[in-house]
Length: 319
Image (cartoon, rainbow, N blue to C red; front, side):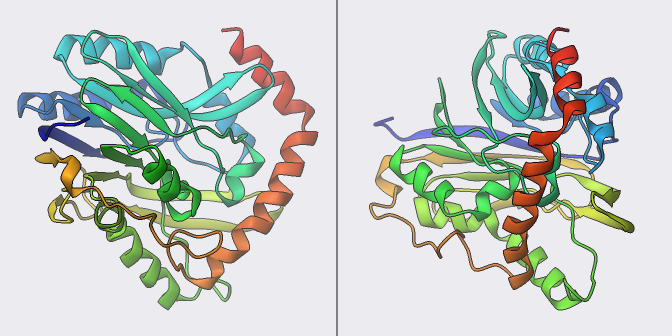
């Protein structure tokens, strides 16, 4: 994109129930229609909006074939409302499950897909990552996609910079960790602040608009391999629209809602040097986050050895 462009964008923040695809999509529709009625050209929903978020094999019951109900819903309503519309869902292909983000166009076509490259911590027990350039080309411009945890990792700002994206989307299904001896309360609060400012970080370091979209509401799940521990926490929301000059145009708290704002895609604002990173990390996060790679290795091994995973993925992928 060579010319400056103004784009009206929307972030939908809402509660998502585990394994209730039809119910979650139905609930989302009124928020999407509200955003479209306010002139949004692009409406983005949270990561795993239709799927829910639970760390047990039950999540596989909410998986869909590549062209399943979520994609049908996206195509139908993006065309009906004349908007670009995006979310991610649990996608079964072959013998694997992927976290796949899709944007559909005002013509009801698929603009592109991005799969989560690095499943976060316990997600590695239930999904497989897939590397890509994390870019979807649209009539609005070149859109970069970082799915939740990926935005904390050094490769994401580097990919956004190298691919010269015009706008960044950051769909999240990000709950707050429960305070514990491993994750003290002060680190939980620090993490919440970093999440609140994540879109600002990307907008300022890349010179492009950044939209962070998260869920809200309760979150409860057991943890694989740790039957004595149950996470009983919340999704903090904090969805935000930040312009290419680093200005926060709108931000939600922990409530359900929709924010709609104009942002400027201006090539002259793009930063000309690679963003600074910190080893594996894009930002200096609380030290407990550094335990995630260990969990991911263990989870990835369990996933690869799972015959139940292979069987269920094959069945769902066939439709």
